Image (tube, rainbow, N blue to C red; front, side, top):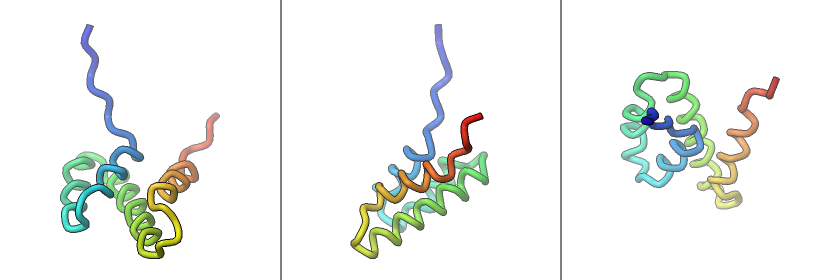
Length: 77
């Protein structure tokens, strides 16, 4: 029984993106989110928030991403 590969989560995409040099991030987002402009916009927003947190040196960027992903998640019905 074969199953289709699971699409990466927003957390996974943002995490991978943050591991890249800033100059490579936009191309990564374009490749990874090519078919989903809303996802690409969300990833860009989260990466920008993580970059701001990293620049401040006060908060861990991955902690910020986790909090923002949770905040943006739709409420369970």
